[in-house]
Length: 62
Image (tube, rainbow, N blue to C red; front, side, top):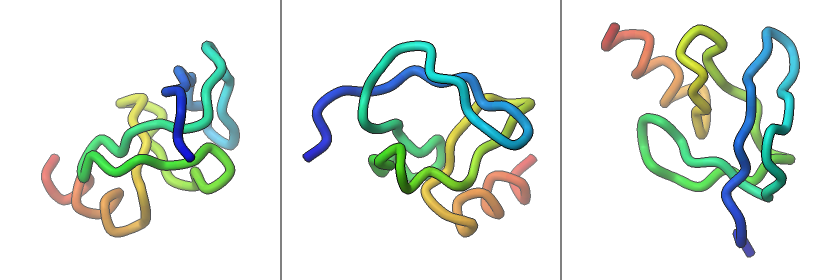
């Protein structure tokens, strides 16, 4: 299902694919996120999050 890790640049309303792949890894939980399901990321930290829960956890820990 998930075969290759993608390298992305996270922009305010979009992502830029630096290196082709089909998934990224959540910066908080370590879960794999398929690119078509990626909805949460931090532009400043350049990190993806599996869901709003992980994004909130990261925000609270800062």
